[in-house]
Image (tube, rainbow, N blue to C red):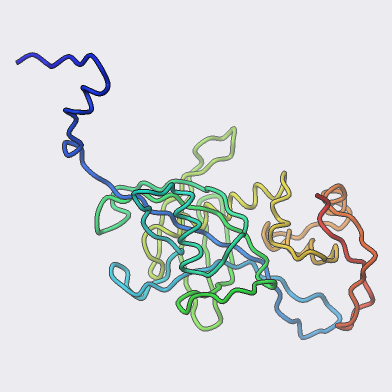
Length: 274
């Protein structure tokens, strides 16, 4: 039998049978980062900054009682971006925060239920200014990272539970310093979400160097010392004061406000120069 030749798109669509194709589902997962304070024992020092990520404890199988990123399935009548915003509000009660697409994860066996592709999003917030209540299953975990040329070890700590995983990394493109990641050890986090976490950390570390993205994690007013701490905790390294001042000189402006108390001399407050 010869193949039918169509003369119009309407004629083609009339005969089209979508059931001949295998189906897959799409989810949106949101990686929410924050930097917040914890009080120092020495009141003359700045409060220590913590880089943290928000996780949700799963109530159902698969991966029941394990931690994962806030996420869910994309509805048939919504875009992935719309789904991410909806899921963010539903699972965390967070609204109107910075969010951008991070990466699409399409490992064949990443979900035991069916073939599922996930688009991960990167979201940033100043946790100290958070006024909405989080869902009861949500918790902030402070991030500690140890990285070599071949792997990244991550410890997540929410004060009552510690989660550990190791991700191997292989240089994909030397000219762009891009890496492929592979989970080596993971007992506590659902799906392939360790890959999303290290990918998000890498994206944030890169963008903090050449964009103003960090100010989505800052309060309206801040000292230069506080801002430097945020850069250092994200980059996971100490910055020299003069070099840091040059980096942010064009990004901030001094206000007539000062920060008093807490055992410190009054410090000038700055704000983001829009």
